[in-house]
Each structure stands twice: as C-alpha cells, then as structure tokens.
Length: 180
Length: 438
Ligand SMILES: Cc1cc2nc3c(=O)[nH]c(=O)nc-3n(C[C@H](O)[C@H](O)[C@H](O)COP(=O)(O)O)c2cc1C
Ligand code: SF4
Ligand code: FES
Image (cartoon, each protein chain N blue to C red):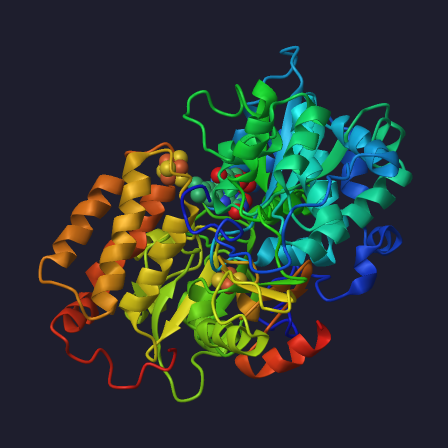
C-alpha cells in the first residue's frame, strides 16, 4: 500500500533494465478497441483506469511514467492522478522486474506452516539473495506478499500470473526448473 | 465438501455440492444441475417479493459483518429515478479465508446467477464483481462463464428474454487488502485510490459513482439461488432451535496447523470442537492444538478450552468472546510462538493500512515495531502496557475498522496468552516443545 514496503516500489534495479528505449504506445489497434469496450462498462471513463493499467502491465511487464501518461491521455485524467492510483496498488510494477516475478505468501496462516523456509529457498536458489532484488541474469525477482487467499494450500506462490499451491521448501528446485 | 477432500458425512452440502466437479463449470453442466431455474423464477417475481424470501431465510452477510441480507437489500429505494448498482465483493484477502475462491473456481455460474437475482431485486442494471488481482484462475473462470452467460442471453440487455437489462462485469483489483472494505472497493471501481470513505452517506444512498449501491460477498450471493429454489423456510431450518438468528450453511476455510486444511460446509451451530478434531482431523502428529482465530485474522484469538465450548454460528462465537467473521479459521499449535505470529499479523495490518487515519497509520506501525522487538528478545517491562494503550487508541476512532482489526489480535492474545509475551520479555523459554517454524 501507499506507505508500507510496497512490492514493486521496493524493487532494486540492476543491470540491463533501463528505460531508454522510445515509448511504444500500447493502445493501438486491437488494444484500443478493447479499451473502448472496457470504458463502456462504466458510467465515467475513469472507471476503466485499473483495467487500462493492467493492459499496460500485460503488454510491457511494468507501468512506466510514459505508460501512465498514455493511460491518462486515453481516459482524460492527468498523469499525476494516474500515478497516485498506480502507487496505491502493490501489483502494478513501477520498475521493471525479472523475467519471472516470484511472490511468496508469508502472512500468519502460511507463516505457521513454514513459509519463511520457502522464501529462503527461493532467495538462495534464484541467486537473488535478497527480497526485491532482481538476479544478475535478469531472470528472477522474489518478493514476499500478504495473504493470497489460498491459506489452506500453504504456501501459495505466484510466478508471474501462475498461481501455485502447496509449495514447500523442498519443491522450490522443481518449481524453478519450470521457469528458466 | 472439505475440498480438496471427499465431503465428510457431517457436512451439509449446499454451496459446495459441485466443488471438484469440472463439468459444473460450464453453462450446460450448470443447467443440468438445476442452474438458472432460480433466476427464471426471480425475473417473474416482484422485486419486493424476492427480498421478502431472503428476509424470511434469515441469510446474513458472509463477508464478515453478518448483516441481514434481505434488510440490506430493502434499503435500496425503488423508483428513485437513479441508476442502482450491485457490487459483489470477491476481494477475499482476509488472512485465513479462501472460500470465495473455490466458489468462483468450481461454480462460476452459481455466482453469476446470484448476482443477477440480487441486481434485479435491488433495481440495478449493472453488477460489478470485484475480484482481487492475484486470483488469476478464479478470474478466468468467471470471465469464461460470463462470456457463456452473455452469449446465451442469460445476462445482458434482454436478460432471459424478459426485456430487462442485467449487465455483470468483472473488475480486477490490483493488490490491496483494504479494497475489500466496501467503500474502498467502490473507489477502486471508480478508478481511484482504494481509500475507505467516511460514512454516512451509506452505500445505499451514495455508493459507487455516487449512486445507490448494495455490496455483498460472493458466498452471500451464491446462497441466493438455493434459497429461491427451496424457499426461505428451508434455509432457516439449518439453524439451532435455540438460536434462530444464524441460519443456513456456512463455508469454513480451515488453515494453519491442522491435519486436513480445506473448505468445509457446515450447518450453523455445529459444535466447533468436534469440527476441528473429527472433521478437520485435529492436530498434526505429535503436536497439540493451542489457539484458534476462527473468523479471519481480524477476530479475537481464543484458546482451546473456549474453542471446545463454541458453537459455529454468529452468536455461538460471540459467546466465547470472538466472532464468526468470514469463517476463515486459523489454527495454531503448540510448536508456534504466539507472540511471533501476532507480530506477523500486526505487520500485515501495517502493510495494508491505507494511511488516511493517524491512529491506524501510526498505530499499526508502532504495534508491529513493539511486537517485533519483544519477539527479538529486546522487550521491556512496559511494552505490554504500551501495546494495550496503543490498541485502545486504535479502536473505534478511524474511518474504517482496519485499525480495530490490528488491535483485536493483540489485545485478545494478551488476554489469553500473556504468559508467552512475559516469558519472552524476561527471556524465559516459551514452550516445552521446540518452535519448529524458524
Ligand atoms: C478492512 C476490511 C476488509 C474487508 N475485506 C472483505 C473481503 O475481502 N471480502 C468481503 O466479502 N468482505 C470484506 N469486508 C467486509 C465488507 O466491507 C462488506 O461488509 C461485505 O462485503 C458486505 O457483504 P455481505 O453483507 O454479503 O457480507 C472487509 C471489511 C473491512 C473493514
Ligand atoms: S482505519 Fe486505516 S485502513 Fe481504514 S481508512 Fe483509516 S487509515 Fe485507512
Ligand atoms: S496467508 Fe498465505 S494465502 Fe493466506
């Protein structure tokens, strides 16, 4: 959230992740048609803000300042307004993340089932070492996340949009083998 | 059913009958199982009559507060000339709770049917289902089912050929526990930061986009078609004879240190001790159950003596000093450090505070800091009193109850397990068994 240790705001960027390339608009062609459809679902255009930001993140992997400006122009709000919204929600990446963003739940129900060992195993085996740091090869970023709403399947882990259940420390090597 | 396990003989399956059955996910499969009959009936009824049936059933909100659903619906004034909205709360981020996820994964059409009936009953042409962004699979299931329902003319411009408009849209959240709070959820649908609003005005007067709005939990709305099919009296029968205030069945999500974690559908008023020990399998081998948070992380933590006496309904939980809440039951055994787990919960609330209110922003942060200091072995004799002082400042003084929710586990744990905290402060060992979770 806004003042807490936000997942993406805390991400530390290493080599090879700079935003130098010219910005390519997301809302062209089919994407623009989709956005126009989404806008119709709300009595005010800005209702489509969260979905529009999702579209940017799906296309680019994160939401850059230029991405926010594009969304702002599409929905007739200011870029500052969009930034205010983006920074509120933890799932919008405000920095590029590794090819695989790994989110491990460590809230109490998972904590009592050993979630911290799962986090440790991911940090060790990805080479990230620390939470929020992208591995040297740009492949992995590991973060802790609050309750994923699957507490009976401790420990749930998200790898990008894949939702994995019942990940124990000894299954971590196996999981990473599927995301190379 | 105790999904992922086979249903236990003591469960009463209504909402969870088709959990684990992939065929129930499709429109055809759902119709074969009696789906959309209730919507057809409802669309032929007067909205007030539908609300009457829901009132008669005694159904109460399953999102945490337990507010009577029929009464809530009756706050929506027909013919006020304004567009009305229904919001379905599928944010499910209260630690310990994972039932709405199963409803959406296995019976998406059941939820759509409940939403459509609810929307019609309150005079809304639009329903938004607000699903947390992390629920990628449930979200896809809902989108797939909605596409089928739209194509079949069940929802949309001319719902079931009645000429009525009932649009149902999914709105995807983006990571924020606070968006489960009803007014924060509405702001989030409006494309705003998810800050809760000051009430009044209440949602039924000025909700999403400033219009009259009703908000209901996924499980609440999913119960509605069953009630319409079988009648309010039928639903009301699932209750203790000495307590008609809690009716129907309830999905219990059970997690933590328990032999068989999962979702269980129980009649209201079932004995809690029997439930935990026999149906959920009791403690893990070689361990003992020690503490229970029965209704999601925001309700008071109780000890096993209290749990064994409790009955599983709103009043039964209140009788032992806790709440039914969302029925997200967190089980903690004797291998855990209770202060450590309470500190972790405080950290959750500190992370999720939207930071509008000083008492909440500062209170959640300081509570976490003090608890983590105690757990690290650096606590002082005054710390426990300070925690209670801070908790008092955090209770009943803020825009929403997230602040209170952080104080609740702290105060209740200090009431029941104070010795564990004191032992840490005086540097004595907490338990005879080693703490297994590092
Ligand atoms: C901080 C906070 C978080 C909440 N999270 C949820 C949630 O994730 N899901 C939910 O259904 N209700 C949640 N609620 C309760 C809602 O505000 C609201 O009471 C509920 O959705 C109403 O539906 P019902 O009457 O069907 O229970 C939350 C409340 C608060 C204060
Ligand atoms: S109590 Fe906390 S979460 Fe609720 S509005 Fe105030 S600061 Fe935000
Ligand atoms: S606490 Fe980990 S999923 Fe809920």
